[in-house]
Length: 94
Image (cartoon, rainbow, N blue to C red; front, side, top):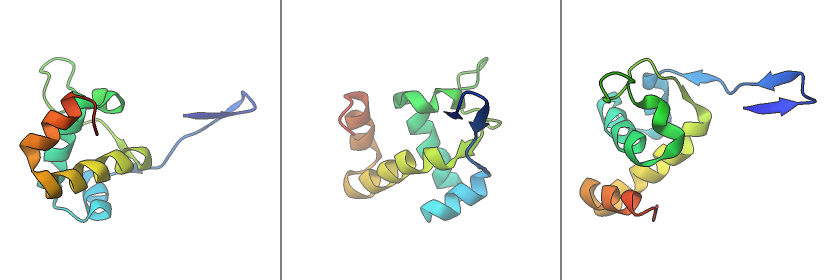
């Protein structure tokens, strides 16, 4: 969130899962896989952890700020696969 002159907050537009998937050029289920990976390894995605169950929180909202990280995950998965991408994220290499 960016603050302008201390009085106003500029919030990025919220995206539905369908809109985010469309921006990424993937199916909604594929987006869910990316979110599952991101919520485990990327700090900005911790809000996607369900507080009680620890699974993917379906109520967490996506913004344009999330798209860049999800694009990196998508691109890396297409290059080296899911397992290697998870290893790289766990080491902080991506």
